[in-house]
Length: 113
Length: 115
Image (cartoon, rainbow over all chains, first blue to last red; front, side):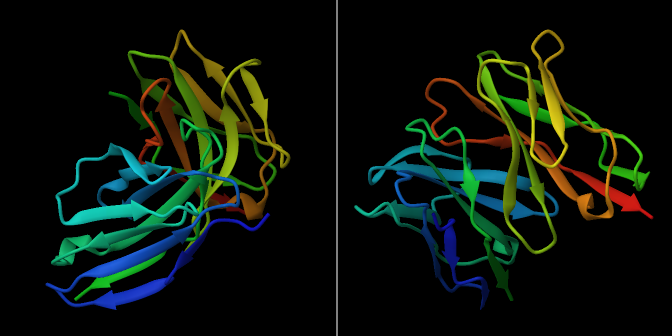
């Protein structure tokens, strides 16, 4: 099976803009989780979707949102970008209905200038 | 809430030496445990998992980890490391029940293998 894919791989945006990142899970995986990775804060959970429903959410401001489509593909959106949003955004998918064993994509490197 | 502590931020070793990367967790409920490895400019690769059964789990490339419930630990070991094992290693936990899809990670341990 193909692994988790994320597009784009690299992105440069300006403060105040918005951005949409895309994630295609492993075929058959219905749980999709998103994480932010920064040198200072490490890996932090953003949210998880299963069957188009957000089941869990991390401690991030409302500028961070996501959605999942009927084919399990997921997108996350960040509005009104801040410099501190510069990070590697990782998507992971799981075959487990509880989202336990997760397989990660290569990530999207977002730079905000 | 769960938390994970990786006791060493950096571990330098020589090639063919043994290594142990330490991980402790805290949780009030049962957890499932994982080790992930990250190479530069890449995503995370699942290295080992403990879901149930034998407390000693092994990977295909020689790593092993042992779940110790009484000490709330899940240390990663390899008897003989290679240059190619140089990477950052993350310990992660997820609580059983309703922690849907939420892995909690440690801060990572950078393993550097010297020739």
